[in-house]
Length: 143
Image 1 (tube, one colour):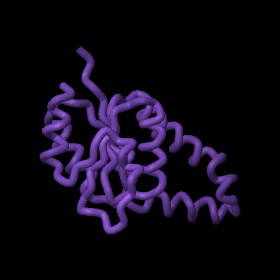
Image 2: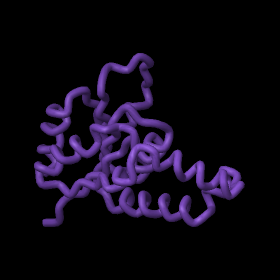
Image 3: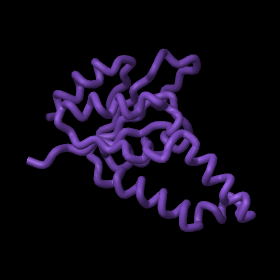
Image 4: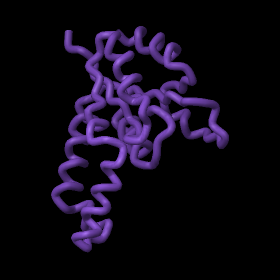
């Protein structure tokens, strides 16, 4: 039987990402968090690089780096069975979550704490968790 693939969705600045992925990997899933490897400032460096080239944001999205990075992430999102949004994170991560939910993939949200501002739309996810152990218990049911 093929291992289920989990795509960890989050922020490059969230230092917990590889540690959360490591714990989930112990369950026997293939866990994709390789997007984290360029480091916390990758998006900022991409922007600075494109600004030196005098690219607009729209042009930068269509340049090689923008297209390549997008296609890399999308490829791994598309091949994944499950998505886990790790908070805190930004707009890009939420777009990835929405895309995965729109593809009828099982998705979860792992909050780092009770949010100051509540939002009902997290109900699009199968469930939300505030403790990694509780998420891990849920993932064990999917094996």
